Length: 192
Image (cartoon, rainbow, N blue to C red; front, side):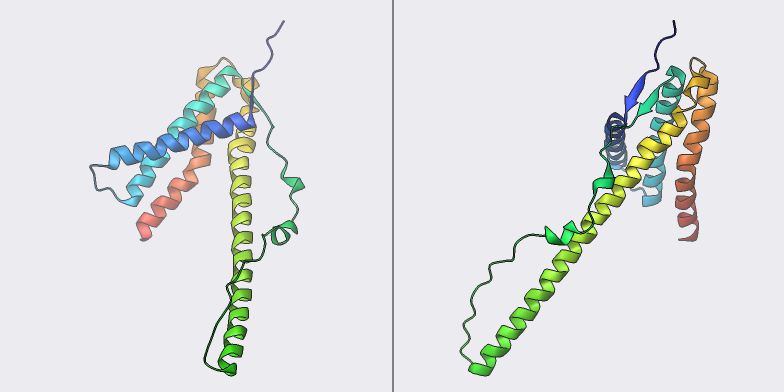
């Protein structure tokens, strides 16, 4: 009788990736505390730490034959018209007391109303941009930390118990997932 395949949940992968991010930030900070490194050097160090963690994680997962299950919340239930509708209540504005005559009072009131409307619209737009940005970042993280790893771990049936093949697959996928970022950093350093 064959043993069942071990499955990791998507939320567990996401939590592990957050731990790797914290370790990367701590490593870059602690190793760079007494050195005056450039941003490019810090990016290379960060990518090296992330790449090493990703390589080891993928190698271990492929060697052990791990699969992934999706337990992320569904983003299809996101309703686009609710950002502005739930943006909050109107502000309690103070009263205006102007003693410059009736024309000054009228002008002050009109400017006050115009600025209130402009600020209200700008706050709604900022809130919408913020939530859309959060949604896009979460979607990207979902793809990177789950969909890509699910694709990698689909090979785990072929690599289970063989460390050499697991390491080769892991090296290839780590190179694919992080190589383009190294290329961007290198080109930025070269051109800048």
